Image (cartoon, rainbow, N blue to C red; front, side, top):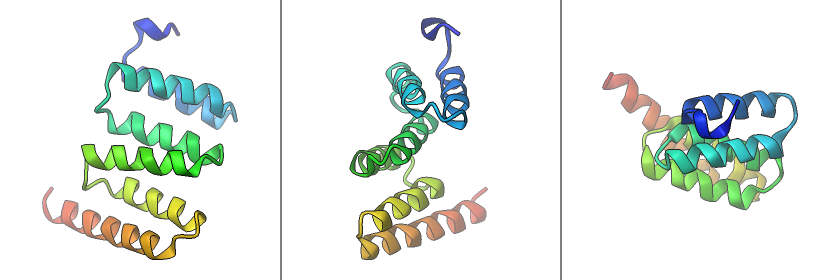
Length: 113
């Protein structure tokens, strides 16, 4: 697949394939390309976060979760994943706060379909 001819969604799908195959660094490049085409893509940000987290680059992953949450503050997946990164960074209070935000976001989405 040529990067220039693909949509952000196609690029994210390719990145996820590469991640599943253990080719995380390569997947990260596809995520970055998707974000270049659509900087507001929550899926591209979450994919990039996953790559960085899997590479042990937790501080960078945390910054990406923040970017994802700027786009969609009610994204419970981003809140949970951010909480997991905070736990791994030894920041349990912040992690619990993030998990609480995920619970509230999930509850709010259920009540406002």
